[in-house]
Image 1 (cartoon, rainbow, N blue to C red):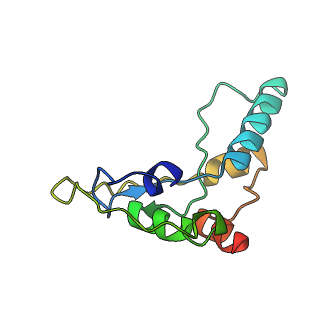
Image 2: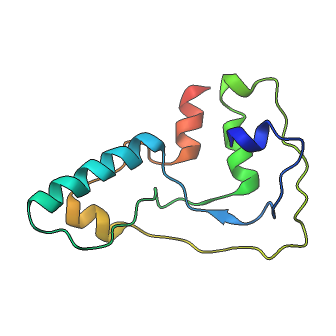
Length: 115
């Protein structure tokens, strides 16, 4: 979002889904995985997402709620003819195996809390 909102254009289809996780939640998940390694339940692949993917356009719209972007607008998208990615990841197995949940329910909720 920061890169996109500071760029003159956004290369990519605005409707492509991006699976999100706040960087603080990614860090807490990494710690939970390291603790799991100590408990000998490691050796697995864990997915870290907030289970609420957003399109590129929605990411930019959500970020604009943050006061630090008050002077920004969404640049034009230049990848309108590119394929639309629709992959939705789910980390319910990660949450269950590690008893972990992200602090931020979604990136949209995170940005709304900063408004």
